[in-house]
Length: 420
Image (cartoon, rainbow, N blue to C red; front, side, top):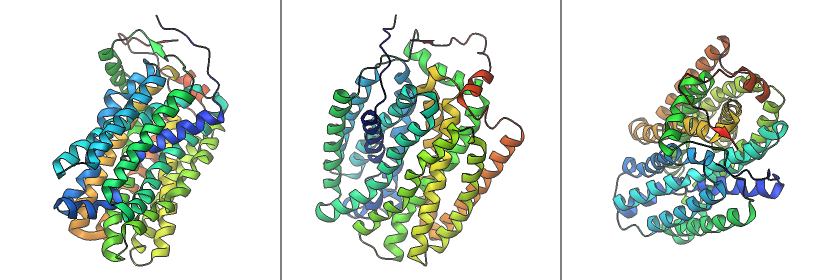
């Protein structure tokens, strides 16, 4: 029997805590990304080996998404999230003290597992939001998440210039400890979203949701391509800026500011989704992604063009992500954490694929090969979206109310969770 608590009011301060928590948790995956050259030199490994740090963080994140995020529907999130943030604090501390590359790789993977806190707070915010503001609030929290990813590079570059890459990780650990206390003290207890299932049944229900919802499967594919593209660019960018422009770690880190426009644009995309314009928004952001790759290629020879390219590219990627989440969260309000798991596991599989591909592609063919792969991915994603839309299955509906009314009936033998 689940205790039903009175609905918590989603104040601006609570939304801000959610956004910062999402940002610091996701940012923990990327602090070392602009510092890979330094890590490689310090621990005596090759460039392609050093790039595995990013992949290890994303693999760990996948584990957290698959095994921990579904618990957000069944456990008190006010305890779950601070616990994950404390685990992140410990993992970052071990990373900072790592004496060898294998130890660093293991600790970074553990940091990735605990970073799943970011994907617990996003559906948490969605569940607390009023339906007419849901897209905008999710967009605000996602802005915090993306800002965390982008600003982590800026902050890490600046700190590394003063104290090295290990100092970066110690500062990150302190931030996570602070956010653990903030979530526990400032966010009210909200109870559990659903009850009546054991942990194995929770995990099995994720697979049932994937089988049941065509929209979910389609958005999983689009998310895979989008995150793969994002990781491809930002993993290879540090190598290109160091080799082509001979920039220092602090300057390389500041390029993360160029992507802030994408984060700031997220609530705009969310508002359009709230107004029932999800299909045209999805089409627009995929169309915008293609020319951004041409600008990125040109950016190897002109740094101003490169900055503009990153602005356009990150806006398009964030628009793709938010349009996907708006469609997915509309499918089943009682299962948002598990829908998040299904979608985000595939999303970050794309991230792993992108970061691994970036290291190999850059070593084999430089920035030119990286952008060629990106163009191919963008064309594939745009064609896939066009086919989904033409078949009338890309989005169940352009509003949560219609989406819920058109959602398919549960499959025989699949037990739905009971709302609180």
